[in-house]
Every structure is written in C-alpha cells, then in structure tokens.
Length: 399
Image (cartoon, rainbow, N blue to C red; front, side):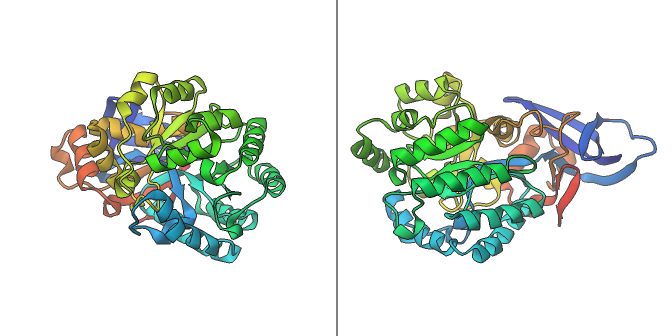
C-alpha cells in the first residue's frame, strides 16, 4: 500500500469539486480512499507541493496525424487531401507506425493523459503494431484501424470483405485488457454504406466502441447529403452505426432532429474545440447537448487540433462555451470515462477505481481555492505543469 501526499481534487459531478489536502491511498493499483490523516505503516510518496487530479481522458485523437499538426488549409476536405492522406499513407508501413506510436504514447503520458480513444493507421498490420506499442506504454487505450473505401486515395482503401476479416481478427485479439479494439470509421464521405453496415454489425455483436466524425463543417454536410440524399445523422442511423457505444466527434452543426435521434440512441459526443477553431468549422453548442441530455467528453483531435496537452484544449472549451473550470475538468475526467463506458473503472479518485491520476505543479497553490487552481491550469497550463502520470498505480512517466 502506498499513500500519495498531495492537494487532491476530484470531480464527482458536472459542477462539483472535492478538495482534500491529504493522502491518496493506493493498493495493488486500486484506490483505497482519500484521507486527511497520515496513514500508518504505509509508504509515503511526497507530492505535497503539487496537486493530484484524475487522469485526463482524450476521446478523439489520430495517431497517424502526429507529424502534420499546424498545417493550414482553407477547409476540411482540402486539408485532408493536401496533408492528412499523404501522411497516413506512410503508416501503411507497420515499422513506421510502430516508431510513430512510440512517440505518440510517450507524448500522451508526458501530458497527463491516461486514457485515449485513438484513430489508428489505415491498415490491419500497422494498426496491430501500434496497438502492441500502446500495450507497452501502460496507458488505457481504445483504438482501431481507420476504415475507408471511397473518395480517398486507392492506397488507403480497405474493401468490405478485407475489412470484415480485419475487424474480426482485431476484436478477437484486442477484446479485453488495457488496450481494446474500437471500430473506427473515418466519416460518411469516405465510407460506403456497405462498409458502415459491416462495421456497425461487428461492433454491436461484441459491444465494441464505434468512433467516427459527424457535422464538422457545412461543406462536408452538403457532400454527405449529395452522396446519400439524407441528413448526416440519418446516414449513420440507416447504417446501424448509432448505438450506446458510439462516439461521434464534433457535432458542430447538428440540427434539433439529429440531436433528438442521437439522444434516443444513447450516442455520445466528443467535443474538439481546438480543432474546430483551427479549421474554422464553427462552435459546438454544449447548451444544446445539455438540453437533449447528450453525454459530452473532450478530444484534442490531433492533427487538426494542434495540442497534445488537454490543458490548452480546456481553454478552448471555455472560449467556445463559457463553462466553469470545474465543469471543464469534469468533462476531461469522469465525463470522458462515461462517454467511453468505463466510469466504473476510472475517471474519479474514488475507492475501488483504478489509480489513474496525474500530478501537476501550480505556482502559489497553497494560496488558491480549488477553482483558482483549476482556472490557472486551464488558462496557463500545458505539458510543463505535468510532474508525473500514473495508470493503475504505476508511474508511467515522471519529469
């Protein structure tokens, strides 16, 4: 048993923070509790100068796009063609993917991220290589091959029969443990109806996460309407993609009919404000998500999002939706775990949960309230604030 001495902040609900100057007690990778009293006969790790928060959850990030952050383009579809597809072609080489995966996961832990929902490389072999690296990193990762079969370069296409075999092998191999397979469709423009239906059927059969994009830009929405003759959300409904383990990124321009459909299917949204600002996609309305009772988490959306650190993403959440620091950190921790369906495992520093936490430095912290600490991190924070990252009680990174 180990006790971590620190200022401990926890987010049990959307507008509530628990603030304890005391000890986070961990045994065999599991949290046993939080106490203001010094434990007896236990090893003490002194983080008394720092604040401990639940580990950060990034619910939308593209591994193959790590090296093309900050590449300006006039719109989403041009950006994909000019920068993203050429970079993703490099990831057809599994050795290249493994190399970049090591860089990718090292950056995540250095930034306090303990759980991530990841878009993998565009081939089965490269995705498997990247998932092996994810396993070695010690992080909690959901990832899958990024599937596409239309309106992309031929090299990136995976046909329906090929995808069927790859998905079956992927979900069988990566069905349990810290690294699990997520069914990953790029978006409706690059996926045929047959491919989407196949992916949805396999995901439902094993209760796997489905991740894809929706309604990021108006030009994208019009392209989907021309291709399928229906609204964006209706395309996914027709394909069977919408179910309680579906995570849709963006949702900037969803109308009321689509929001009602998404809510009725128990679908979740990953809000990616940094990416939306970068590509000038618009601003997702969290108030609308609240009114419909749709669960929302946060995503860095690398590479359209330029930040690996989720702290600058929180700043952009505030600029987009004017929410409090407490609420922002809720969506980054427990809110993210809920969207991934693992709120009973991680997301809060609560007895019985996995000891997934990040240790951060804040100047003059002893003079601050909990909300002031969070505000400081949200508006001034980045990777330099992160002192250490723990997953299942194991230190996966230390400055």
